[in-house]
Length: 488
Image (cartoon, rainbow, N blue to C red):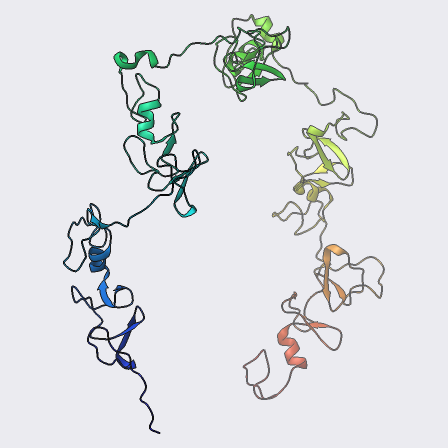
């Protein structure tokens, strides 16, 4: 039985067979590559600009001209105005260049359909305005027939919808300053002058409140929309102003006076603030306000001349003056409280702080320089830093290395000198504690630190060079440090 050849698709344009190597697909049909072009302008097409209609291919521009909507604003692509009706389109059933399908609108019961045409409104075409459903094509201004949306729609008292401009003209306020939407000034007094809005000044004190409950200034009832609070009392916004200069106040600049009235800061300072040289309108002002010298002298603030005005119990006051030390002026030194004014060096009276204060054995405080002179080590190289002095002629030449020479030796002391090591001078090496002055290389006596320290097998410490020389590998290529050739 002979094999039947496989079916090959035919190109809708030329009618010939289309093979896989040259096929182009569109609308369920396969075209030759050279046949895949617009049927009107012969423009070559691809998958991005191809449109199929009744087994024929078009570019988007030609498809829009032939089968898209017509009229003012439609045409070639977008932005072009076209009224052409190509020869390849059917003009039957066309109005203004656009195809129209006959439409029959089913009438809805009274009050349930579209307010404009009365027909049923289905979900695909409904537009809502205040709970009522409109057809999309009926949702337009009742006066200028402009298409509306949810933003530009305004529902009028007559039950219809209008654009904002027509609504303003028909139902908005009239008179000077009102009219076309907003921003336009209009004065049609002859036509609708009696409809122009009239404003009146309302006196808030018309409705009087019960004694002690109304506005403190006018006595009227204060409602929530106009109330301003000051120290728990309610004021009218109109009445909330300075008693003297009638300046309008707010919560930032209002000052409550002793007379239960409100003032601005300037008037409060003049009336209730301190008077005399350096006081008055706020601050930075010099004013006497016509006061006599005696009144100015009596009103001027005075500071206590001495910190010993209030004597504290024995052992509880300032160590220097014996006065009571309060929190605003206290300075601490080894658990004792000093006045800030008294917290200075006992010798040179230099003001001190927590960084430069030194507590001496005499229970006084000193600066670092005076402490070094009084209680520091004496001899050549000691004293008032950085000057080298010898205050009493005592020399330390007999102890050039500065090692301890007094005290008992112990097994837990410094491995080099045997004396005890205190925290201020200790250096640590493999859990052993050394004096800072004893912490040097056993061979070359070079001072050591944590970066160049090497612990030897003999329990002593070395620098790197001496450690390599004594305990490092020997031979060519080894020796002092690294990279040196030695034949020892």
